[in-house]
Image 1: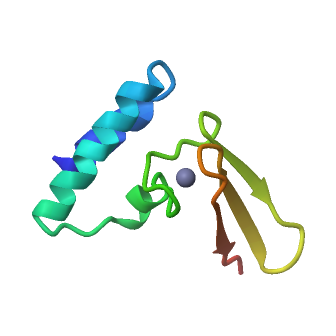
Image 2: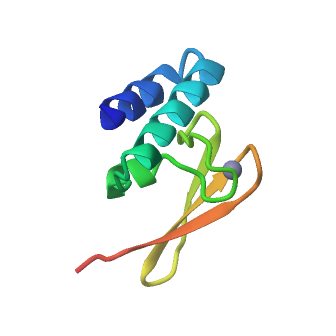
Amino acid sequence: MAKLLTESSVSLSHSNLQLAKEQAALARRIMLRFNIRFGPSLRRFTCRGCKSLLVPGVNARVRLGHGRPTIIRVTCLDCGHVTRRVVNQP
Ligand SMILES: [Zn+2]
């Protein structure tokens, strides 16, 4: 259910960001209450700085690094927190 809420809030964010954030916060509360861990796909949409919904193109800026290994930098446009993710390519 929480996964469903997060997914729908991500799609909702393109039309109504405020409502989407509230829905994401609700999904987060549900997951905390029932002690459900964020899956890797869900974690991608959550800012580690302000814990709010993070949607690339809406309130997040995604940049690719040029070195090796490839690093993806996701910048939260709400609080400015930068999340770095290493992409393991063969
Ligand atoms: Zn943030």
